[in-house]
Image (cartoon, rainbow, N blue to C red; front, top):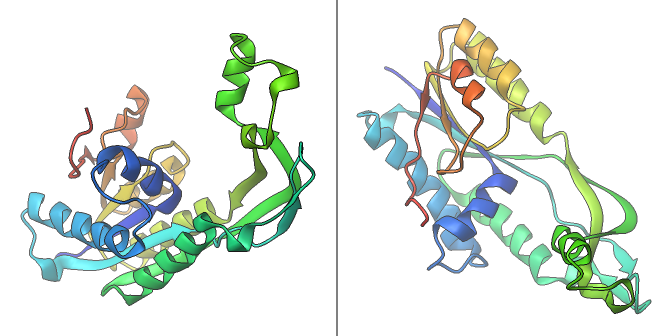
Length: 220
């Protein structure tokens, strides 16, 4: 029987979730986890495949930041392990583990123990709606990035293709980092579909995929 694997870039999905499902509580981990599974089933429905065709859903993310950092302006200490964002991420990962046909792949969150200006603050400084002496703690965010996530996505795509475990892969992502893995999968005869959740993609990405398919509501 034909099999479909669905790979979800967690950071991208959560960022789009707030725009696509604006009427839902983005901090409700159980609802978010069910939405991931529901979106996978919707893909199968659009492709006219039965639920039994779902091989597995792979969700890629990182554990939350658990460190204590000193705020850049006030000098106050902030324990990130006690923040709402950290609690949500832990709860989400737990809810995802409970979902049927779900594989949670966790990378690492690399941080430098420093702070950086938020993008919006940069813009405000440029247009002079904000001045340097007006900067507060709220204008900064921890300087951190995900590591190993893209590598894990690439390894799983290669394994699925080489082992002939599926004949179709749907990737929920929004950047071009997947291109080498997509080319490999297509070379092995895999039908490779990209779901950017209605976010625009570069025109040249079309030549590296077999189809573009977004099944979530289209945001206005």
